[in-house]
Amino acid sequence: MGAAVERSGLAVVEELRERIRQLQAAPRRALSVLRTGVDAVDALLPMGGLPLGHSVELCGEAASGRVSLALRAVAAAHREQRLCAWVDGPRELYPPAASALGVDLERLLVVRPRLYAQRVWSAVQLARSGAFTCVVVDLTHGVGAAGRPERLSLPEARKLADAAARGGTLVLLLTSPEAPADGLARLRLEAQGVQGWSVELERSRGGGVGMRVVSPWQALYPEVGLDAGARLLDVDDLGTDARAGTAGPGFYREPGDSVRNGCGILGQRPGRDAPMPSLHEGLPPSSGAC
Image 1 (cartoon, rainbow, N blue to C red):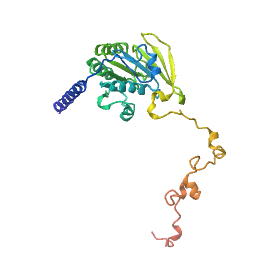
Image 2 (cartoon, rainbow, N blue to C red):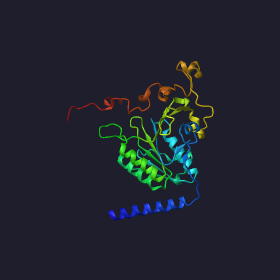
Image 3 (cartoon, one colour):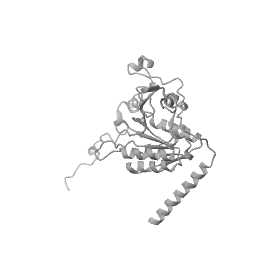
Image 4 (cartoon, rainbow, N blue to C red):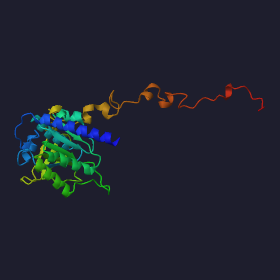
């Protein structure tokens, strides 16, 4: 059984190698940076984009735009006929959403290790191979022995930076504010409600630390069609009936069972929820004999 599984695994690896050779055979031009397409974010970085051969950290809470920004970088590599890899530790990568942002799923290798430590090992091997232009490592949702978020250690960060330099690969680290990493550059992302999102350059060896931009969500999701921006629904727009709690269909709708008979659930399932009528009156008089 073990030998059969090993042979199957070797066959998969060999198939991946052959697929990589075929995809890399296409002519390509030299790249030094990956631009996300969000001009305000690219301008924050000294090289005008995410630099290849370095590790860059995208730090933010959930729904801050960190995953979408990483997907846009992957899509930029795919437009140049390059390969990318995604180490999906939390197992939350949603392929349809990635495809909607321009990701070519045929050129994306998704690795889902079981343990937190395996995420770093997988990313080091992928980046060091030189086969992938961008390697994204999702380090969120890792919980340590003390119940606190797992944080990338300094030796692990150095291994990732060395692998990125050796392979000429952009390593994108997705982290949370509670457990930041030690990438050569760090972008802090924060959601600003319906108005948009902000990006701050917290760490960089090329200067510009402390620079911050605020952009509308449309800059990150132009395909969604938020041309007019988000609109907040005001109670005044609903009219006096809605404010009084007597709006028509769609607002404060009464439960259907109350509308039909006013008896609630007891009126809908008689004999099941309501008490059964007594059967004593329909029985013949007792003779007293057992």
